[in-house]
Structures are given as structure tokens and as C-alpha cells.
Image 1: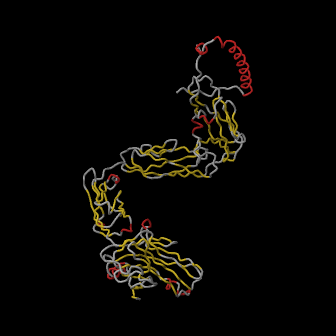
Image 2: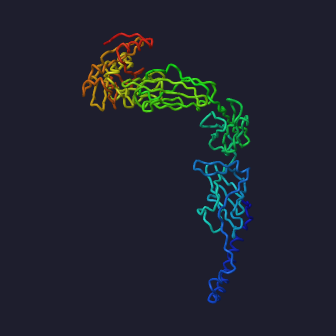
Image 3: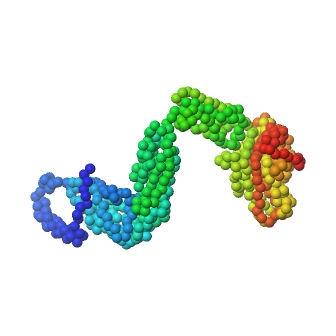
Amino acid sequence: MKTRQQHNNAPRPRFNAMRKAATTLVGSLAAVAALTLAACSDDDLTAGTTPAITPVSLEFNMPEELQRLIYTDKTGSECLPLIKGETVQIPYTLEPDTVTFADVEWTSNNEAVATVDQEGNITAVSGDGTGNATVSVTPVGYLSSSGISASIKVVVSNELVEAETITINATADELYGGDTLHLETVIAPDNSTYKTVEWSSSDESLATVSADGILTAQVSDATIAPVTITATAIDGSGVQGQKTFNIRQIVQPEEVTIDAEYNNSVWAFNEKTLKLDYTTVPAECTTSLIQWTSSDPAIATVDNGVVTFTGRGDVTITATCPETGQSSSTKLSIPSGFVRETYHNENNLTFSGDSYTWHDGYLTVKAPLSGTKCRGDLKNRQSVYLHAGNYPIIAVRMEDVKDKYAAEGVTKRNITLDGSSTGGFSGGLPSSNNKWLHDYKCSDGSHVFIYDLSQQGWQNGGLMPTNEEVLFKTFQFKYADIESISHDCEYNVYWLQTFKTLQDVADYIAGEGLTYDIIK
């Protein structure tokens, strides 16, 4: 492509004079044509003429010293920052270079911010760094909407505003050799004159970074090595931002071993996901190369060591090293009717209140005051599968607000296990308030409220069958009618689980290092 520098176009008065003269000449020629038209054929009229060559494209040919200043704003427009009184000239390329009429016209849509003459000299007039003027160049006779035009936003600052801080943002901090990553910067203050930076790498044998912030990890002998990328302000302030990335090389895994604690372990369907712990040889291998498979995707799927439960039953998860063929497996059981919420994984949070605070190991449920009473229910946020034959015991360990706020006069609260199933079981279990089968008060002051699906029937539907699971779309503890308190209150929930027997409940409490007294 041949590059044509900006033409030294005549000033507009001269251009207008030429256009007037051309108009007069065209009129004279028209008179001559009228006298001869009758004697000429169509072929005679076109013989010996050359068709006009029209422009196909017009683009800026931005010099490097200006290109380094240009940034893209939130609207996707390219912006050129200038300081009041500064003048720059932008060359352009008009294609083809043999166009018949190569004259162009320069315009500014906001001359209070920036002006432009017909030589393409852009002058910054005034601005606070937010307003802008769009400067355009278009072939004479064409509209900017034709697409044969070039434009740029000019943003003017009355004085240089230097950067104070630079922050580098990226979607990852670890790359493999050959990977690329787009880096972005946040420059403060927001009204800093220049929005671009100069990039550099502490070790270009590990990673390079382009002028537009594309980080490329290099292939090297190092298994893993850090490299620091620096963004330096171009305003002369010397302000820098830095971010360190780990560059890894692809190392084939030779051996993989899944943690033995998972083998034949029981997991609840409502826990949704499980991230497996495993070790490899070599330790710093590329773990993404390990191939993971599930014996039954209808029960559980697996991706990069993370198991997602999709059904109930037994499933085997296998990890294989493709280079050596060595593998390791673990068997997981997701039994029908097993529910477990222990509040050790916020991403798997199932049982919560409308307003709550998650802690590692317990949940604080808010019970706001409404009128003269407080209420804060503990609700299951997804469907739950119960099986009165496999896991008939439902137990929840939580605080009792009658104990917690006794000194403030709380004398009443109602706790109702309420549900609604596809099998017609609904209402309270067993159909009214505070009807748990057992109440154990633990040595830390919390209570374990216990229900038995094999003995206690629902308000509607009665006892559940013991030979099949039942899907409950609603499953909640209504914690309401907290009376004789004049402010919002709250309570902690430590776990909610189903068990096979009461002895399993007792053993679980003991495993937490607690003792208990039987209240009921």
C-alpha cells in the first residue's frame, strides 16, 4: 500500500474561488455541448474519455509518538489526549493513490475543545479532560457516513494531570509457555491526562508484553518461574504499577494419587460439588493434562478434579496420566435420603435464612422484628430428597432464642419443620409447633432438635413410605413468634443432617467434642 502524506490543501477561500471558476467553465462547456449534441452519436460522446477514479478508503497514518497516546474509551472510540495549546498533525492514507480528485475536508464538531485547519493541524483549545471534539477528514463531496472517512476523539486538558497510581488487572496470574493474556490498567486519578502506559518485563526470556498490553509467556527450561510486569506512566512522573506472574512449562504427569479419605465415603446430593485432593509425580507437573472420568455421569460428573453430583447411587471417579497410563480411583456413595449441611463450603450453601451471615462452620440467621414479634426461618434453597427407610432421622443443631435472649424477656418461640413434596406430604412435621421427637441441649448451649420420619407423620399425607425416596420442593424450619423482645434478634445454626439411627446422632455430637442433656 502506498502511503500518501497529507496534502497541502489550499485555504478555504482559495478553494471556493476555484469552485466558482470551475462552475463558469462548466457553463461554457455546456453551451458548446448543446450546439454539437445533435450531430454526435452516443459513441462519439464517450470516445477518448477516461472514467473518474473515486476513493475507496481513507485512513489515518498515525505516527508512533501519537499512537502511544491513543486509548479506547468506554464507548469503544479511539481518543487522543492533548494539553491546551498543543498542536499536532495527523497524516492520512487515501486509496487508491490514483484518485481523480484527492481533495479532502477537515472538520471539528466542537471547536470550543479543539480546532483543525485544512492542513490537518489539530489545536487543543480548552477542556477539563472529560469533554471532547471529534476531528474528521473526508474526501470533498463525500459524507462521513459514507465510510470513506477517518475520525478521532480529541480530549483536552487545560494542564497536565499526572498519574498518581497504576494498577495492573488480569484474569489470571499463572500462564503456561505459549499462553497469552490481555493486561489492563487502572490509572488514578480518573482525570489523569494520559490513559496509556509503557510496558516492560523483568525477564523477556520468561514473558514479553506488547505495547497494547498483550502478555506472552515464553517456553523456557524453568518448570515454574516468576516474572514481574511493569506499567510506567508516560507523563514523565515515573509512577509505576507492577504485577508478578508465574510462568509454567508443560510437564507431563507420571503418577497421580487421589486422597484415600474419599474412598467409599458418603456424600449428600445437596452438597452439589466436591473438590478432590490428590498428589502427583512430579509434584510440579501440568495437572490440566490429567484425564478425569466418571463411571456414571448420571450420578456424578468430574472436571479437573471437581465432582458435581447429578443423582444418587455409587460412582467411581478415576484420574489417569495420559503419558504413562497410570491411574487412581476413588468410590463415592451418594445415597438416597442423605442430607448434610455443615457450613464449611459457602459455594455449596443449601440451608439459609432470608438474611444471614456465613461463617466457616456455622450460619447466623437474622430474625427481624415485625410489630411485636421476630421471625427468621431456616430454608432449604433447592429440592431435597428424603427417604424414611434409609435415613429416617432429621436433626438440626442450632441456638434456641429462648435461652439466648432469656435475660431480655423472651419467653416464647415456635419452631416448625414444614415441607411440601411431590408425593402429597406437606404441612408441619408432626403438624404443629415445637413437636420434635427429642431435644438435646449440648454443653456449648446449643440444642439438637430431632425428628423421625418413620414415626412422625406430616400434617397432610401422614407417614412417608420406607421403600422409596420422596422429593420435597419445600423444606424449612419456621422459626417464628419470638415474643417479648423489642429489637431484631438472631441465632446460629451449626449443622443439619439426616441419620440412620439416634445412636448415629449421639456419636456425631460426641465427635464434635460435646456432651448433652436430654431435655425431651
